[in-house]
Image 1: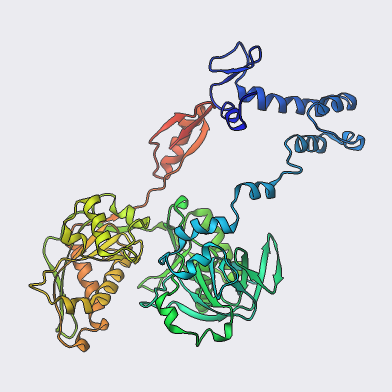
Image 2 (image 1 turned 120 degrees about the horizontal axis):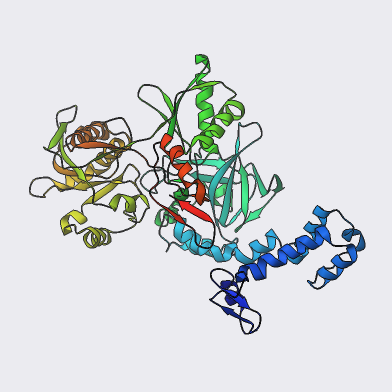
Length: 561
């Protein structure tokens, strides 16, 4: 009588028995009585089941009346299945307290959840004036900001509706907005940005949708007409008065530019796609049709990636066999209506190094006026995983904070910890590091800083396509040792330095004992103990092996890893 609901629920799992004589829970078995879960959960269900299937109408009415369940005479005369469904529905209170009530009770409203979502997903500074409007889900504001997370295909597969959440402002059909892609960086790289007009706004309702003329902050919406430049996710920025968007006050925009929401990550699905297949159309004349279909499939499936190899081969990346089967079905019948030939599947590898470069690797630009010297060495253990998870925010942290992280976590010296230039291949969560290890007495730092963006682009290009088999490089640290640069800017442009930096990175990797890394698929299987031995030969056919098998407490099942 003195127990709360939470305390009572904790006694329903584990080694607890109910003693009816003293009306207490005990940790020791009481005769042949089952555990408390059996007493309070299973036995009532078994009795209800037996009553609905075996008792007469009068006896059943008396039995369920004590449970607070009241049915009409017509309901009591129903057949076994619908009768059991009605009784259990009212006994469990699912008739009045279903999925929607569960969502209302356990999922916080947008005005409450926005603060945590913005802290996790927004990539820009949180002290900008419009960020507070997003936290409060303020509709009465001049700035419209929407986070688009998914593209839903139309019935014909030719167009897409952008599904997103409005964080601030209001949107309506005919409004002009800016579409910021995943590669957009304010004041640095605005190539992945386009201006579009919202053609229609709808509220998604399962299989159907409701067209609306206005949607305010806190709502999920489907937007038509803005999908042309969106690959996976995007950030939509607009003004309430859309006629002033193009010529609005640029000074305010430069002072507090809108950053993008971080691209979605799928850690529980492996983090990235590792299975790949090569495709070609059955009819070579339908190659443009297949390429367009691959572009649409990449939009429709969040974890699908497409790539064109140097040989001209079109490669499709996915997470597994069933996933790829769905992708190929949509490619053939929904998005492209083209028959394709598929090569045998393989896995995506990663390139890495296990030693420091045996010699200093250098390369000269085509005009013979610039020379870069690099070496490669492996990253500290565990650092690549932290970079991949985005725990090191080099674009938001200053040099001191970045330096303190590498000094305290990995024992780097002060000069090295503050000389990190960039990550690769991704600027935010790449698993490789480019460092400036030059000395001011040997290299003109001002000239080197002026060429920094070109060298970083070459490094990230090389990290994206490694020297061994054009796969991503992982867990590698590239150090710039020397740099001889031309005095005139015209002789040290990006066209000269980017390919040179790429060649130098490849050379330094090849001299640092390169290795290929193969992905490992880790899974957990729950099964009865008598079939554990039967699982092992099945796994061996796929080059798998069991590293652990143990019984699950309180059940007859085993957990196999």
